[in-house]
Image (cartoon, rainbow, N blue to C red; front, side, top):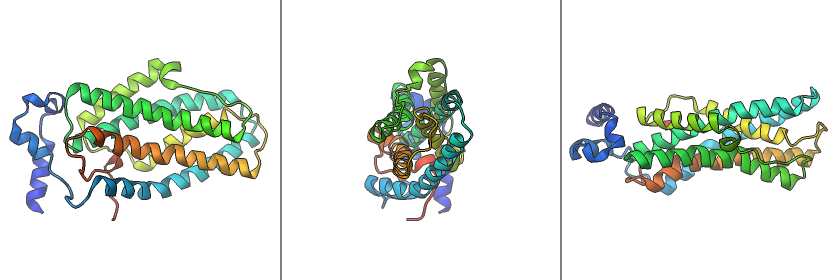
Length: 254
């Protein structure tokens, strides 16, 4: 145990430039950083573990989102408020997703400037758009909400979403151990999806089946994309595909 802790401490001191330009990194130093945290864990076990661990957080967030949505309706909140809240929370979610994606990629031995850039950008912007925009839109369309619509932040607010994605990538390179509370990540993601749905409402109180459908799509928009962005996607390109890494570097019993 003490030897493993010493290895982790030494790995943490590796100059960050080596993750961008691995060809310049001494072989011994690079291989040191790629030690496995738990050699018995496989990629399938990691994904299932993370899906189970995310489910309670996400379910609570979805339920809270329904109560917030009812509050917005009761207060007759204009659509412009939901729009402004969406364009605040969605870019923040992109930043956190890009950071978590690169942190996972690094903990699994990933390196290389362009690989880090594109994996971080697609993991943050691409999957963040799936979570906050596409899945909510399909929910609005399937549930027959009055004003369903696409809201692509990386196009409509390109000047905000893309720079924050780059900052998230840089933070993931700076530290492979994210320090953002995982609950906050879930709440921001849920909020972005919720306000996308709220923009499709007409101010009337939805029926119970529609509210249940909204809760389901809120759950799906956070649960699956989060694990995809933070775990599955970066591991597809990482050298150590069975590295025992988790979203936001949290630990769960298994």
